[in-house]
Length: 238
Ligand SMILES: Nc1ncnc2c1ncn2[C@@H]1O[C@H](COP(=O)(O)OP(=O)(O)OP(=O)(O)O)[C@@H](O)[C@H]1O
Image (cartoon, rainbow, N blue to C red):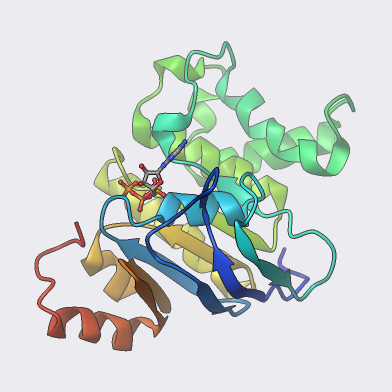
C-alpha cells in the first residue's frame, strides 16, 4: 500500500456548486505524501465540497489539482455516513468485497484468496462475526468499521474521509484512528474533515482551516495555535 508517493498540490483551486464559488476563495498549497491533514472550519465553510472535488465528484470552478504521481488521482473516498444508503440489500462481507472492484472491475469473480484477504481485514476491525449480517441491521460504528475495511482493500495512496467519526462509538473511533495512523506510516496521504479539535491536536500532522475569505494551512501545532489566538475555543470549530 502507498507504493506511490502521493503529493497533491492545489493551485488557486476554487470549489463550489454550479457557478457559485465557496466562501474560501482560491486555495493553494500541498498535501505532502504520508501526512494526515485535518480539514476544519465552520458549518458551510466548504469542507465537504473540497473533499468531493478532490475525489473527482465535482469539477473545480477554477484552478487545478496536481497529482505528482501522474495520471488520475483515484483516491479512496468515504463520504459522510448520512450519505450512505443502508437500505441496500447487502451483507457485511459483500460490502467489504466491493473494495476489490477498483482493481478487478465490477464483473470479475472474487477469488478464494481475495475472500480470505477480506475476511482477515474484517477480523482486524472486529467485524468477522457479522459477515452475514445485512448492513441495515448494523450500528453506525459497525458500518463505519466495514467501510474502513473496504477502503483498506482498495489500497489507494490517497484517502479522503468526510467526518468519519460522526455517530460512531468511542471504541470504534479508537480502532479507526489506529488504522489511519497505520496507513499514514505506510506512506498513504490522508485528508479528513472533522470537528473535534482535541482529536486533531493529538493525532493529525497537518491542518487546513477553511474560513470565510481565506484559509490557514500548515503543521497542526501552528494552525491550532493561531486558532486559539483568534479565540476559537471549546472542542470544535462550529
Ligand atoms: N448539493 C449541493 N448543491 C448546492 N449547494 C450545496 C450542495 N451541498 C452543499 N452546498 C453548499 O455549499 C456550501 C459548502 O457546503 P459544504 O457541505 O461543503 O460545507 P461544510 O464545511 O462541509 O459544512 P458542514 O460542516 O456543515 O458539513 C454551503 O453553502 C452549502 O449550502
